[in-house]
Length: 112
Image 1: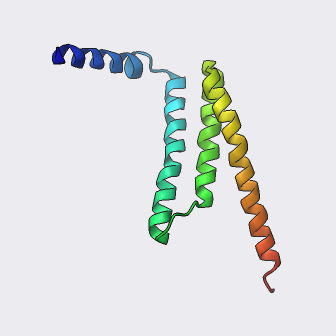
Image 2: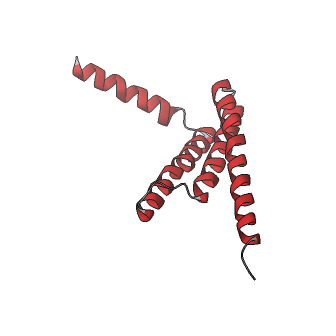
């Protein structure tokens, strides 16, 4: 029984990652890796600061990975991905805008 499950899993993984490999699968995998990199950036920044922080790079990785995943969802006609990433990308862009606005206000109050 265990051997049968192992063979079925091997067949499934081969079908998903090898037999169906094309440009869009590669694009989607790169998008997911970019999106996942944001967690590594956040974790490393937090470890260095000794507290939980969300660096600007987190939002750029979120936006880049989210936009690539959105393109992948559109190309593959995946409504769940399209809706999820379209909404999330708006939030990522808004956070970047707020951070830039906050930094601009901070620099205005500094003496020359």
